[in-house]
Image (cartoon, rainbow, N blue to C red):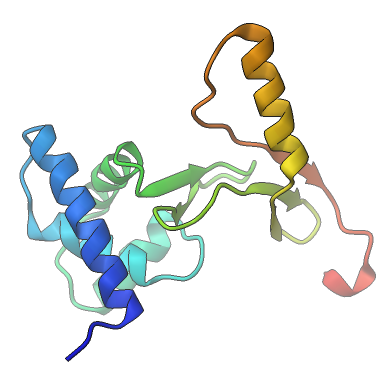
Amino acid sequence: MAMNEGENDFKIVTEVFTKFLEERGLKKTNERFQILREIYNMDHRFDVDDLYLQMKAKKYTISKATIYNNLQLLIDGKLLRKHHFGHKKSVYEKCYFSERQDQIILSNNGKILDFRDDRIEAIKKSLEEKFNIKITNHSLYFYGYSTDENTE
């Protein structure tokens, strides 16, 4: 029986995470891979409470502390991104198969709009040349509000 795309993706991120843990001499616990599976089954951003409640509803025995600790490992392993959009809680999103995106955060309705603009890549290249550096990562957030009355 052939693997579907989601199963194949999970197999890939499992291998990446396993290698990451082995390189750092960390244990390969069931909880770590359960968290990874839940995140890679999601198709939206989430906060720790969302993930915790989702896992508790599925009868996982897990604490918020375990989730927090493992989210940091997934960030360090480049399998997860953390965002703080000016709200009280940080939000996370899986990132292994996605290209970098920048965001516009709308303060009046809480929406987050993702975008990609090649001009930003040109600026990045220009900065690398000007300062003789290599930029390995960046984040760009624009904050504003919607002027469309229908988006409230």
